[in-house]
Length: 193
Image 1: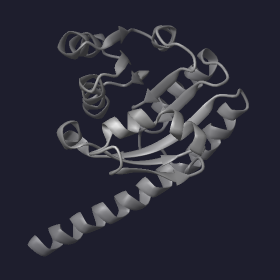
Image 2: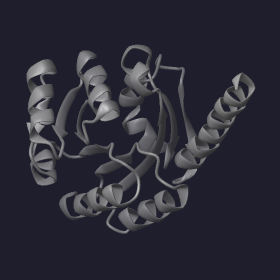
Image 3: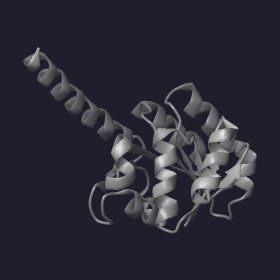
C-alpha cells in the first residue's frame, strides 16, 4: 500500500522503516526537513515538505497516518488534513490522544465523508524489529481497507493488533493499557526502592 506518515520521530520514523522494508510506499513529512531527507536517503521514503505535498503524492482513497504528540499537534494536523482530503480518504491517528478527542475528530471528519481510525500504538524503540501492538478504533470496513498496514506493523499478520470497536475505542484501550503498564512499573520501582 501507499500511505503518508506525518511525523517521523522515533515511532513514526521506525514505523516508516518497517513499512518500507516490507514493500509499502511511504510518503513522509516532518517539521524538521533534515529528518525527512535522512529517511529518504536511508530507506527510500518519498519526501514531502508540507501536509499538502504529502497528500498530493497519494492516490484516492488516500491514507494518512498522523504520528505526532497528542493535543495541539494532532489537532493541527487533522484540521489541516480535513481541508486537503476528499470523501473516502482515511486519517489514522496513531498517537496517545484522549479517546474523547478521537470520538470528536471521527465525527467531525465524517461530516466531510473522511474516515477516521484511532490507533493506540505500543512498542517503542523495539517496534521496528519486534513489531507494534496496535489497538484500533473506527469502522470495521475502513479497518479492512488498511489491514495490510496493520499486518505489517504488528509482530505478525494475525497477532499483536485488533479492532476494538468504534471511534475512540482504540485510544480508550491504549489508555487502559498504559494504566496497567505504568502501574506495574511503579510497583516494581517501589519494590526495588
